[in-house]
Length: 95
Image 1 (cartoon, one colour):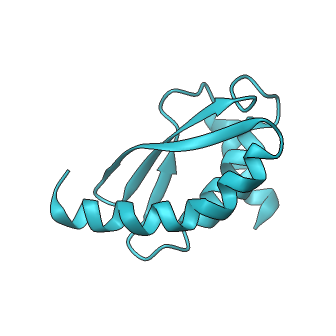
Image 2 (image 1 turned 180 degrees about the vertical axis):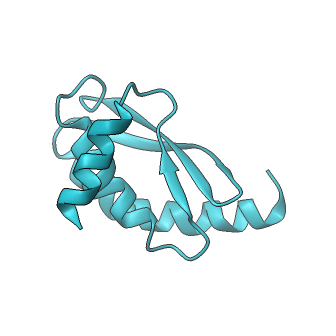
Image 3 (image 1 turned 135 degrees about the vertical axis):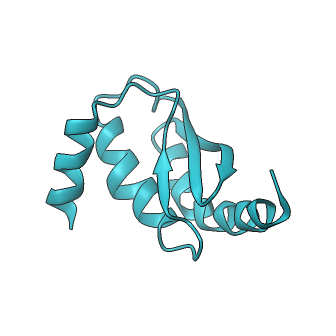
């Protein structure tokens, strides 16, 4: 991770604070696995793993919060098995 990614990671961690408190209220959590070239890779944990609402949480909560951070161009969850078509439908619905 280069210096610009490390600065971006610090800003992402600040943005995730509110998200984390919401998820923890339901027994879940989210952590940042990596930041590279503006793409943030997150990992859902606890009750969020395997939750049927994970795709909605990814788009409407996590992605919505992180894309407000200058420099973030995308959010992915490489350890989750989110169907790309479902994620895209949710994105269109929440916009």
